[in-house]
Image 1 (cartoon, rainbow, N blue to C red):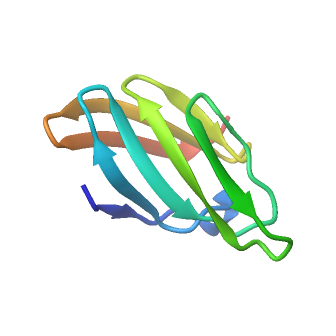
Image 2 (tube, helix red, strand yellow):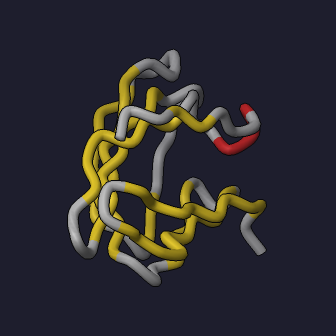
Image 3 (cartoon, rainbow, N blue to C red):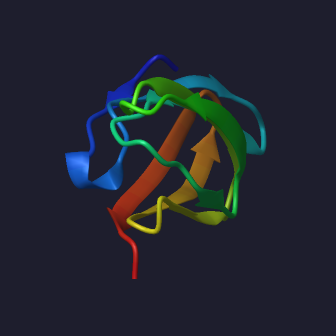
Length: 92
């Protein structure tokens, strides 16, 4: 926990920080770098200001493939004790 993953600016997010790992889910937070935000496949929410400020919280279950901002695909591949394997790729 506490690990930070830097993603390309085009994804609309700043560095993603893992805040909690449970037996079946990973919780993350990230600052927003754009003026809009959308997610499908994971639960989450956040606030956005007109200049792109704000942040988002995500909770993703093992096996889930989420799409963030129609630009990024995030998958929780596996969870082993307090370690999670995430796959982050451009959305298809």
